[in-house]
Image (cartoon, rainbow, N blue to C red):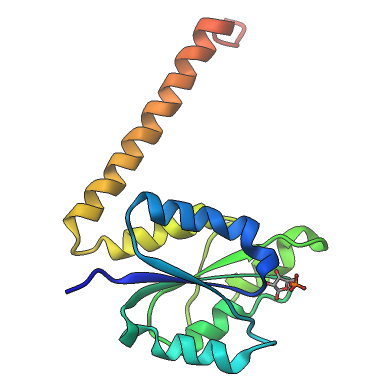
Length: 170
Ligand code: RP5
């Protein structure tokens, strides 16, 4: 069976500077994806069509990014039983708190897994972790990414010690 892909939906093309980090992360893991600009309030019929047909078109996880009164992820989740990950986008007002609360505070029955404000990379990693169930190759790639991250931090720790000596007073 062909690998399941990730559908990324953003409420506006103005969300793309944040959302592209999700694309980069999926690309780095060789996960197939497509990205669409569709709005829950400006194009409600198109959002419903995409979400309700997603499972049959080979999608495994949907990432939905939106700002302000961010109901996109919740509306998508209403039309599918696929896992939906919401990215609250920081906009010019309220620093993204509006989008965070709109995305995370889903009433019971229709879940949305919400990442941090502008947390596009984590949205992609979470999607990858979901898709890695039953996929040993992807599981291995995720484990390698963790090891790389660990090595990077330990390297920074070594530099910090070499260049500055450890901070502290003992
Ligand atoms: C939301 O409103 C979008 O997701 C975007 O974050 C915000 C502003 O959209 P534009 O006015 O830039 O199209 O629907």
